[in-house]
Image 1 (tube, rainbow, N blue to C red):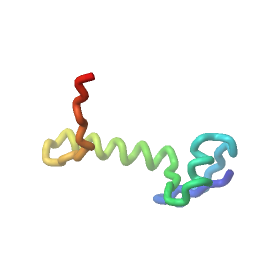
Image 2: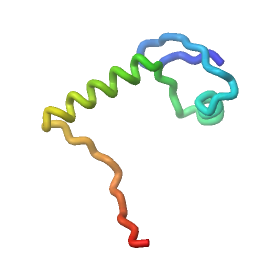
Image 3: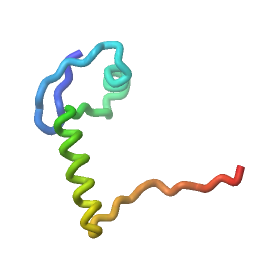
Image 4: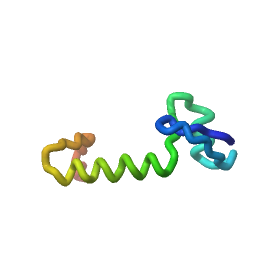
Length: 66
């Protein structure tokens, strides 16, 4: 399956039977991001977290007593 990165518009080929290909095929709202863009965003996010001025809002976890 040919896919295009939504940020840099690089065209990649992924296996048709991979879970990512099935997700992209069945749910059109999901978008593909190449490994370089994904790694770049992850690195920049880690740098912003290290400054202490960036708030990373994560989902609220409910502690279960079970």
